[in-house]
Length: 325
Image (cartoon, rainbow, N blue to C red; front, side, top):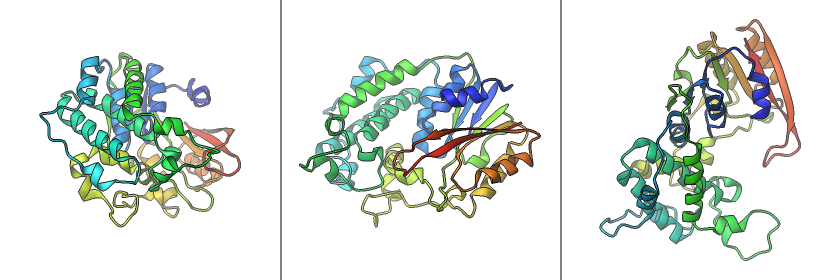
C-alpha cells in the first residue's frame, strides 16, 4: 500500500470505489486517508470484512460478547454440518466441532450485524492461518498431521487452537475500527453492478497469467464462503470434489477469452471517474492492451511498476499500476 499510495495520493479525489475489495486493505487505506469509501466484493466472506472494517465506524465486540461467541452453551443443540461434511478434509474432528459451535453462536447470539462481521472476520482469519498455503483448494489435512521432517510451513501455527487465534484476531479487528467522519459503505454486488459516480475507481481483478491460468478466489476460499451461508451450505457444495468445493460459477473474470471485454465493460461503466488498475505485466490482458483500452476513454494514462515475488509463482514479475484520468 505504501507503493500504491505514493502513486495515487496526489490525485484529485474525495470519494473512492474499490470494485474488487478483497481483504479490504486498499479500502482501509482510503478510509485512513479521509476519503468516502465504497467497498465492494462479489464474495460474501470478503464483503463481511468490508462491513466490519470499512462501513463500521464505532461498533466493537466486548469481552462478554467474545465469550458469548466462544463458549459452549449447554441449552443449545449445536449442528454438526462441518463435522460430517468436512471430516479429514481441512481440520481435525475437534476443530470441526469448534467451528460448528462458534458459527452457530455468531449467527444466533450476536444481534448486531457489525458485531457479527467482526466475529466472522476473526473466524475467517483463524481458518486461513491454520491452513497449509492459507488456501482451501485441496483436501490436505495430512500435511499438518503427518509425522515427517518439515522444510516449510508453520506447524506450530497450524496446531495452535482455533480459540487462541480467534482471540488474537478479534482484538486486532476491534483495534482497527475507527470513524473517519465519512459515510462509508460495504456492498456485495457483481462488478458490473457497482454504483457509478465516485471520484476514483480502483480495479484489482483476478489475475490471468500468460498461459491463460487464472485465479479463482471463490474456489480457493470456498470454505469461508460456506461459513457465511452456513444454513444453505449443503445445497451449494459440489460433492464430486474431494475438497467439497462450492458448485462452480462461470465468470468473465475467470475466462481468458472474455476478460479483456470484461475490463472494457467495467471501464465504460466508470469512464467519468479517475481509473486505477492494479495488475501484473505478464498477464492476460497484456499491459499494452490495458493501456490502449484506458487511452480510448481517458486523455492521460500513466504507468508505475515494481518488481514483486508472488507466492507459489516461479520467477519475478512486475506489479503495475495504470492510472487513467
